[in-house]
Image 1 (tube, helix red, strand yellow):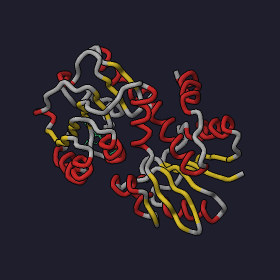
Image 2: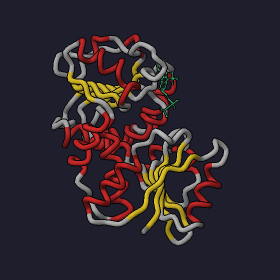
Image 3: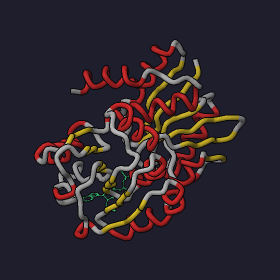
Image 4: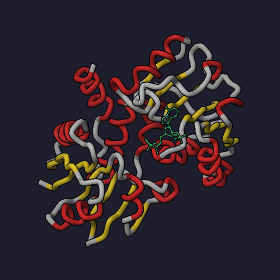
Length: 275
Ligand code: ATR
């Protein structure tokens, strides 16, 4: 069977091996997909070794997504604009990089949650790798306005500057705003920070929400709990990152295998396992 893996540090908690095994099973495809712990200074070497041993591609998780884009010979537009990659494919001795996180997020919001992004007001909280990976595809879904807010304001500004051309194409008003100056409410609020992970309070005022807003944390499990509780408290619609996880995997599977797996079914199964 063709071999794939997810590389990260840490990686033991990753659900990707389960998701891809299930995709393959349901699609009638045969792959082997493992988890590979990579030393913090050993990512490039780990990729080369896996490729040399016959691996066909890999997913990349924390903290290697920027490095994954940097070592690639070819990048898809969305990986190049994000400056980060989560999916590598090895072909003719070359590394081809893609980033499926944003497409996964958009698919989860639009298909799984049933909310159209077009014409909406969207708030993206955070300006690290997680935000960079999804901003381009979010703009591609043509919201009317997208605001990026971050604790460190200049990082939000830099992210917005590098995406202004895309925003223009999508006819979207793209702005960076300091957290103190945020004025809502927004239809869709996306937490792409590690704030819950740190046990910190949600880093934006509750005035960004109105009853019925979608409040999505890109994490899941205990890491998303604080944000989701905050959303519930303000009558917003809470959503964790499990759907995004399955949908980015589905995009990666398609990138490698040319088959679209039944992601909604796999999400329902994973939800039952996790909850
Ligand atoms: P990732 O690749 O997961 O995005 P990152 O690049 O370290 O990781 O970015 C983490 C994001 O979470 C940043 O937007 C960070 O804000 P700063 O740019 O100001 O550091 C945000 N973040 C982390 N802990 C936070 C906290 N306790 N409160 C608010 N924002 C936090």
